[in-house]
Image 1 (cartoon, rainbow, N blue to C red):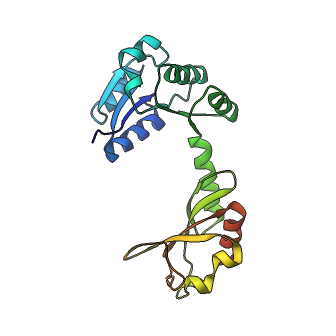
Image 2 (image 1 turned 180 degrees about the vertical axis):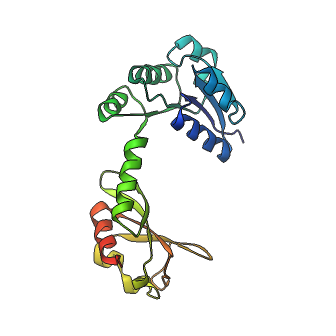
Image 3 (image 1 turned 135 degrees about the vertical axis):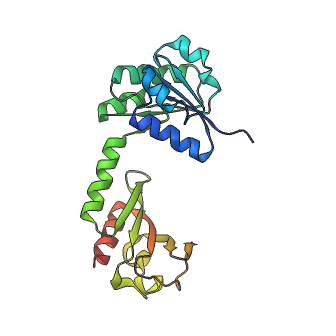
Length: 220
């Protein structure tokens, strides 16, 4: 089975981090940057690296970007270059284009030109840190949409020894515990009789409001 192939335009902190993680997963990654030092730095950790201008259509053609499964535009310091690179990837037929945005306006422009997914790494990390600072039981959360979230919540001492039926998050708040990460392993789709222990991690899905209410109720 062929490994998924990614081309990453821009090898700054975001682009290089994405590229190295994709390599860990087993994907093939081509890194493109006009900074020769950055290209040399990551030459050993990515499948291929190229010193090139990501806004040059002929260069992108020559490296065969249309044959890649996904193109990631990780250019953050030059919004014009980011937009132009995204347009070129779409025009050259890359199957999926993901782009980093540094502002809401930048993101809206990327969406307008047909980018399949726009990510805001700085904004999203700031949101995660703020939630973690204000919610001691919250380990992590992922927004599924503007309304729905998946959150990881540590089980406080006040819930230790109680079953999911006793806690009843679905009946009381409308959110569901879809997994419990215990010391002995992960319980997927736990039933009402499963017992919670302190420091277990609950994976909860629901609306932002439902999860916020549940979080508030279990603060120890």
